[in-house]
Image (cartoon, rainbow, N blue to C red; front, top):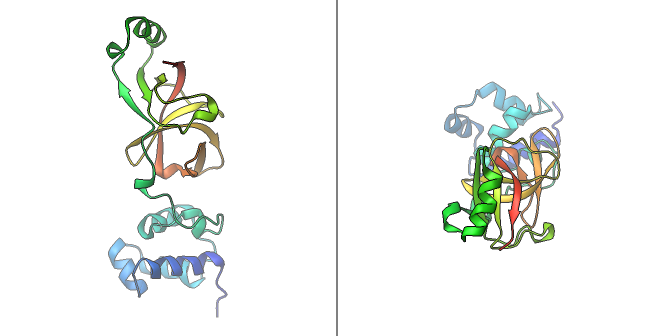
Length: 193
C-alpha cells in the first residue's frame, strides 16, 4: 500500500469538506482527469504539482499552499472580508491648488488619482482622505505601496514579495495570495488633505 503524504490527506479532507463524498463526483464536477486526481489523493503522487494545487484550492475554497503542506492557513480570506481601501477620483474634484499639485505629478504618466478611504495603511502614514497618484505603468519594488485588486475590490498595501506564488501586502488584512490579487500600479505621490 502506498504511504500518503500530508498533501494527499489534505486533498481528501478538502474534497470531503466541500461536500464531495466520492472522488468521481469531484472529478466530474470540475472536469479533472480521473487517474491524475486519484494519484494526487491516494498518494501515488506524493507531491501535488503547483498548478494542480491551485485548481484544487480554487474548487474546494482552500489555500493551495495549505494543500501542499506549505502553510497552516487552511482557508483563504473570504471575498467579503476584504473591504475597499480607496476610490478612484477625478483630479477636477479637488481644490484648485491640490489639482495643480497632483496634475503636475501625473503629467506624462499613465496614472490615476485615488482617495484613501480606510485606515489600513496608517502605519505607513497613509490616512483616510489622503489623495494618491498611482502610476499604472510602474513595476513594484519591495516596500513600494501598491494599488491592487482582490475580487475587484481596490486595496492599498505595501508590496513584500514572499515567494513564487504569493506576495504579502502589509496591513491588517491577511496575506493575499497572488491568484487572488492583481497589482494595478504603484503609488508615486501622496497629497495629505
